Figure 1: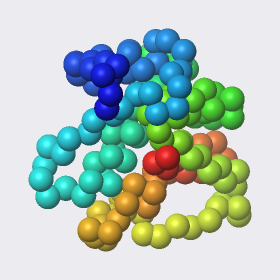
Figure 2: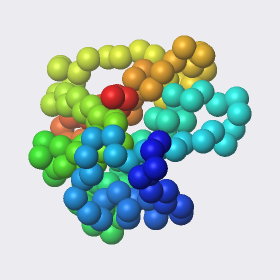
Figure 3: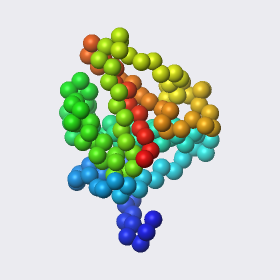
Figure 4: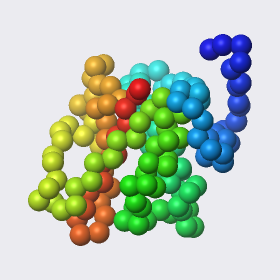
Length: 146
């Protein structure tokens, strides 16, 4: 942090409005603080959960209708737009799309769904979330810390 650091206080919704209501800031300009509320929780899991909420809320902010987003209607350009805001926080949104189950690549374990496999060595990059679209299309979302 330097003398020019501007601190913003507020709840999750205030942060979403702050982040997405203007053009994306430069890479690393937004410093995200994610204090653990449960001391024994894995930091990577906590970070993933928070980033997933910020990602979904960004999609809702730009492309939502009645608080929902149809992932089947999103384009690569739409995802890149939200990713540009993540870059301002020094994160990258990683989206793998498997158009059919024939192209689907299994990845185990799914730490987000099956948390008993989490160890002290499990990091942010190990977590992912999958959403199923039309015709068994699978969207796998993960995040990378830059």
